[in-house]
Amino acid sequence: MTATEVAGFAERIKSETAAEHSETENSAFVTELLGGQLNTDGYAALLAQSWYIYEALERIGAGYADNAIVGPFLADELLRTAALEADLQFLLGDGWRATVAPLTSTARYVQRLEEVAAASPRGLPGAPLPAIPGGSVRWPDHPPHARTRLRVRT
Image (cartoon, rainbow, N blue to C red):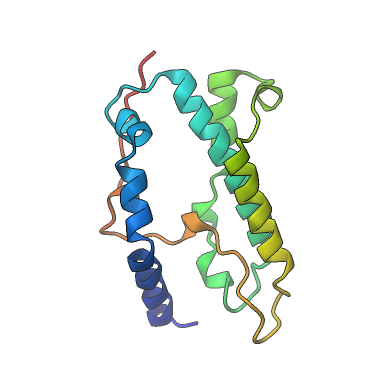
């Protein structure tokens, strides 16, 4: 896949998920998060759910690193699991894994990622595309791409 094809694919994803992005970006939770009204517990809960998703995406993605279609979307600088783990350890302590659990919606999302990946043979021409980590497609003009300073109430 050429750089032009990757850029075109990214634009297609951006346009086809615009409504979902807008809905999420304007949700009460995100408004509180970006407005500095979310407390530390709420922020830690968000990180925990993100950890479950990124752990699955990165675990699945590692199996496709050499795939001609998926490989261009994978880059080490996009990996988030280790940073999420460090943040959760800081916020919740050494035993943080025993104190968090995926929400039902998070568990369903992770399960779906695993199902799609299992149904996509690695490197088989014409096979359905495997899950591409959602965090791996970035748009320079998209506000979440920019570093956002979060103010968390303590």
